[in-house]
Image (cartoon, rainbow, N blue to C red):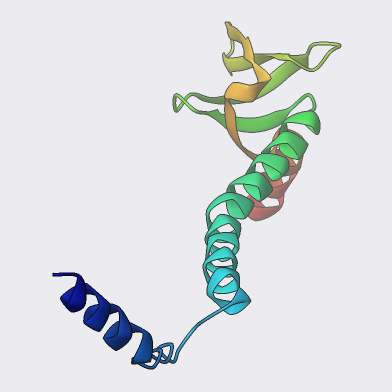
Length: 124
């Protein structure tokens, strides 16, 4: 029994070490996945961050007589903007005004005064 164990150990010690498989090894093996994760991060979060920044600039630039569309689909004209810029009063019809958060505005369509002058020029 002891003899067979000694023979096995001698046989195992004589065997040459196997060469490492060729391909990605060392630091390159860690750089590639990190690069892919960074690339995916850029594609997933940068467009959203850019859109949020653009939207915040749009909301902060609101002024009276801007034509807007809310996230609920209500179209109207900005009647007033609060001092802190958080609330906007929207004139929907002649006697209808809605006070809402400025962040609920989806798009600014244009300025009512510039559209009115454009309509007059078209009708002439």
